[in-house]
Length: 471
Picture 1 (cartoon, helix red, strand yellow):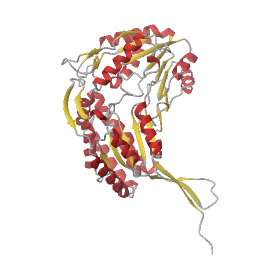
Picture 2 (cartoon, one colour):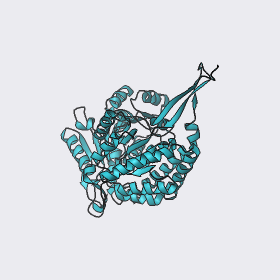
Picture 3 (cartoon, one colour):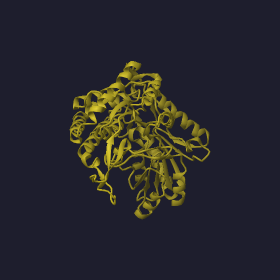
Picture 4 (cartoon, rainbow, N blue to C red):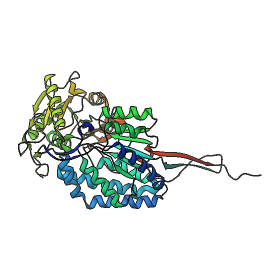
């Protein structure tokens, strides 16, 4: 996925109009030093609270997010162009994530007994480790924060959160909401950090880990710095998820479902179905339906409920980058049936790119290996399940993948062979606060959400007792 450079500053630019609405100063070095001091001081207190005490605050965060979902969603739409309905859904889903960890904390953090220990007892404890740095992206500005922050607050860690430069108002809003919910001072802090200040935070011995969702380039840079200072890292990076259609009752209906998935968040999701792999007997009707549906869509206001309206990409650099990738794919021999061009929004401005349908991408084409972060459906034709699997796995990415078939056993056999962190059968992607999220290969490592998220930044301490000493 793409990211925006901190060197350009923190600012709100409405992507539907291109209008600069508000700018924010970067943090000073002294503010970063103060934030580090506060995070450590807060950790010493927050980590000592009982699970029930922490759960009460996390539960209140859940309630406030749910209560204010529409107001928060309006800010999301203004800052990064998400459809208003999807933004409301994102905030409500984030509320569910905080609620899940508050409700399940006692069980998730319970001591794990070890069997067949020769002494009196032995078990594994899940304990906090200290302040953490989160580096979050713009495409899901509340959900991405929720899935990192919720389990770690429950665990007893404290958080320094560096949000995307195009989401400063969402970033501040979240900090204010968390404080209102009852988080003590210093437990969660938003920092408008520069790249150099991020390096300073990572290097600080009090900071025990880093979680980043973003581009491969950013992930590699952060992982390198964290490794130099022996810090734990969780990375959720790019994706080019295969979406395999082996059979379907109706090829055109299957295409409509695939397009609806691809259009989610205007194509700006790491686990979007960026490579549609379709059996040859369905292929022609599938592609034709994609082209017809994409051609009928018009740029519009992201607050619109019209299903034929699409919104802007998050920034001008995102829009320009996608059109450049599509132009390069066409130059290399791909067929661009429709779309892939910068267009004006309803007010004559904005960062809009018309939905593209692309075929005939061979292994020499740059689009074969790239992640197209936007409304671009790349479709491949295959003649067998074996060919579909080989194509699906011929990627540097391994985030998620989906397989569709009227033959459930066949679909499961194919899904079993996908080299991904999340395999789905007859659904685009399973989602839930209790379901782990993460990938393999260059899509990163570590897991968020579900029970596994609690373990990523936990001291999984062995506690063994032999028994009383005998004199």
